[in-house]
Each structure stands twice: as C-alpha cells, then as structure tokens.
Length: 239
Image (cartoon, rainbow, N blue to C red; front, top):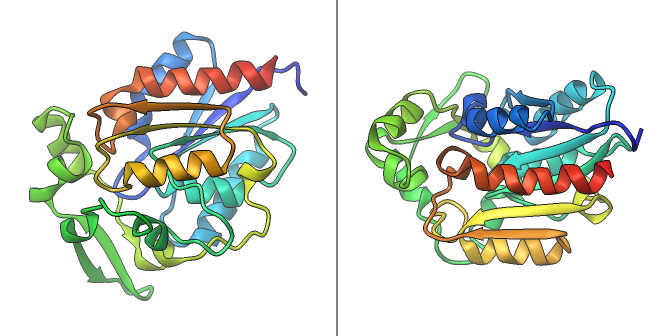
C-alpha cells in the first residue's frame, strides 16, 4: 500500500461547502494527485465522522486526510484506520479527547465569530448556526474579493450547535499516531492564531506554514499555499 499514490480527501468545515476546495483540487490534479472533496453533513461530530469513514471505506489507496476548521474535528475522530497515512489541518481544530470546537475557540483570545452568527431552531432538535450575510466577508473571508465572498455567504452550509459543542469522543486522537501538517492564517478571526500554534505544537507537526495577513478561508484565498502543505504530506507518506 505504501507504494501507491495517496488519495487526498478534503473535508470542509462549518459555513463552507465542498466547492471551497476547488482551487486546491485543481492544483492537486495538475500535480496528478487524486482528490475527493467530501460533503461534510455538519450535523453531529459522531455522525459526521461516521459518514467520512464510509467515504474512506470506498477508497483503495492510502489517504491524506485534510480538514478545514470544524472539519479538523471530524478528521481527528474519523481517521482511525491504517488507510489514513497523513493529516493536514487547514485553519482547523486539532482536538484532544474531551475538547469541543466551542471550547477550543475560547482557549485563547481573538475569535470574533460569536458576534457574527445568527441562530435558529431546527426541527431535528437544537439550534443551527450561520454567519450573517453582512458579517461574512469580514469574519470569514476578508482576503477574498467581495463578490466572491458574497457567493460564499449565499452558499454557506450552516452547522448545528450540537456539532460545535460536542467533545471529541475518541481516546486516541488521530494526530497522536498519524503524521500531521498544519497551515493557518495569522489573521484568522474564527480560530485565534495562538490556538493554531498551540495545536500544531501539541501534535508535533511535521510541517507548519503560518500565512501572514490571510483569512479563515485560506483554501479559497490562497489555494497554492494550502496545496503546498498537502503535497508535502503526500510526498512524505507516499515515499
């Protein structure tokens, strides 16, 4: 298996969707690296991870698993098989057992996401969160052109409160046993840069890229930087 070219599986987070990986997928394909952008349900951490495991079960090569934002929670919970050879966290949470996205986001000062959210009840129970249209550009994608940010706002995938509040169930977070790479922005308004640095250090990251002046939507605004970290992981695990 180690001699097969890995497949890159990309998992978006809250307030994004699969097309947020388009620029990264294009560059991976240009480098002859197969890639799949998964539609993350954003309903519950155990359920989202179970769905991702179902996707992984259908792939017959090693996998480099990439998560953005809350997608980092999902890949950390889901990557419990020998098939996953590497992890890449893109402006993403890399939790320890018992940590939630909500709890991690307040571990260090700097996140302004709470003030940008709207909440409404859903019939399946609890509340669902989205970023207000008037706040989306500044909060989520400040370095993306306004017109494109407006489209991203209109196509954002809301997330349930249950998902964001859920503590990581596994007692074996994937980054403890699988090599990881981190790429993040120093002006991320959703996840403070101090938290990104903390999580990368805790995970013993094989590679760290800190991008100056970039937003939380790093895969959209600077896909070439994100792709560079992914290719670094692909080459390391596929050697």
